[in-house]
Length: 269
Picture (cartoon, rainbow, N blue to C red):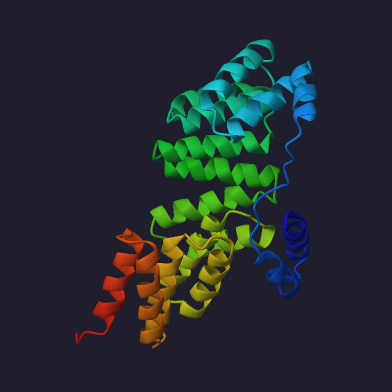
């Protein structure tokens, strides 16, 4: 599945969307991982900067924030000018809900590597936590300036545009992210909801279908698809979809909200 995803992403970036779409529709669980105790033992014995950074980022990827924080603080003491270290340390602070600490440490790395795109991206995320949306936009655009194919930066710009109620800008940013390639179904779900708000119901359904092919438990996409179907006059299909979802996901707020919207759409105004 991961190779299929990579192939689809390659076609997508070449502009071959008709070839890419069916390849990207399959569920993508992520890069293959083998349970290899011997290899883990070898990795644990590796020394030096690269090995220490790898171990720290692996802890970060696994959600072990305390472990990653401890390792990255030690690395930062030894390599205070390395932008990769300061950016990863800042990422931990962002996940811990400490955006100002993240900005402070990432800025130190940018003093020595001012064109490090991931650092500008992380500062943008920290500024979003601080609700400094205009400054966050500036940082995200700078990340894209240094790394044009930075899909997560476009996704975050889309999120900011939605917070500003600028649906057209959100659409542009999120479509750009999809064209570059992102394997996060919630990013595509955000695009689907943007289409829904723009009354582009056919386009919304297409995005929700792609989301649900990769993750059938994302109830916001189920609800969004039902609303789009009802707007297209397919009321019974919409209600059937919601009834089935209500059995599988009882008392889910997204399903309940969508059901209220669909039912109210049939009432005389």
